Length: 595
View 1: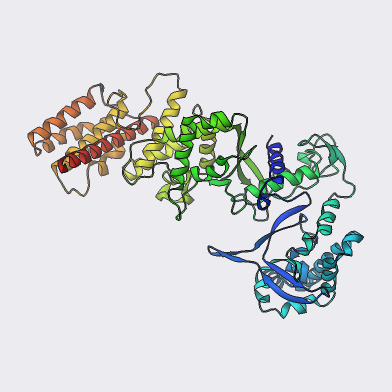
View 2: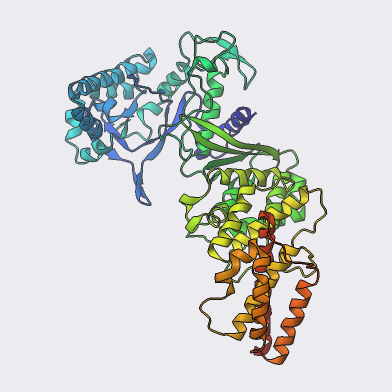
């Protein structure tokens, strides 16, 4: 299902109206080429052109459509008319050279360099006759036979090339395209891409009888996976083989060469550095696409991703636009048959594991995203972000609010619950982490309160017991004892603050943890202390607080000896709601007084 959807997306992007957005044809791939050797027809090097541009703290090379690269292992295998400087020029990589000297194998490394350069030249000479007669290919062969390394060393920027063993290709002086992009070369790359002797079988993706791919192209861009790439489909041990299919890797999951190229090209495109269709959710690299082009493909990254410094309001605009589309019925009318795919990937040694996958109509997906933000909605301060990103929600429950301390697998589990719908509970670890951070820091803040409310409400929907869902703001009719005790604690703290203005620490700093877990051990003391505080207040204010305490404690028969985790969450939510009520009431009074 996943590979079929990626193959369909590839076919859609093959016919994109914008040529810049088209994915390469079978046998070709998009590759970053930092340096281009510009040569004349007689093989003379004119210049070593640097295609890189400064992007942030890095220099990024220009991307070109080139013949598909060979999947390299420990052996020597050259690409067609593009490769690293080791292959193209036979120049040593400084890091590898140093490592070989440390292992006393420098001679072996230099011998390997000769083999690599020879393999690069041989790959070109194996082109069909019509491609070998091309002027650009002839110029490259003349350059490679005319001391290429000596010519390259004469260039001023040669040291920059060797510092990183950068990828190189060729361009005929005066041309726009690379030599490997010339029509006859591209056609030769496509027509000779099938491996000789490859067995034929029914492709699991297309259902067609076709030559089967042995090794699928590596998937790059998954956070935490190997930088050289990892695989979703691969077999490398007898334990993974069955039914006698042991002669060749890949026979257990027969995928044609064209389909394997299609799904890997599509997935690498979605995971690309500048892709607008990917977000990082904890350790899950999440990509998304629709069967037909839709605005939500580009908007989803703004909805869940962290806003950029250049446009901090992009997230809010995207969510509000989604709300408007859902409430106006625009999505329901236009997208019933346009299915949306959301795929979460996580590293697993040399492979990639599928953390979650959802495929559903666009209108249903939009409703589930809106439901998530409805679940997270809670009364907030003036400067609190209205629609918090997943990254902020994750760091809110991590120690010291650091991304490095986010609990493993939590991000992927939250995203899975969002896309699964309102009936799916958020992971219990999220509620646990939010409650524990409230206790550790002695105070529920906006983000943690929103998380607690959302987790509790989704659990209530699945529960067989009838319980009222929690509202975004203070609910004076909610009879839950733990919620009432949280309100009580906030009221007692407010009384203390008004009785002793300028306090550096309140009862929250000393008693919050105990009050939220073992109420009976704390509240008898706090209720006795509040009498002394009330005597310091004006008579009218004292009476108002007495009425408030009476209203809060009305449904509470007794103080529990212990509150379980979910009730500790209800306590934190009651405390937060009551505190926000005090702030709102105070602000309203100040505004009214100013009028």
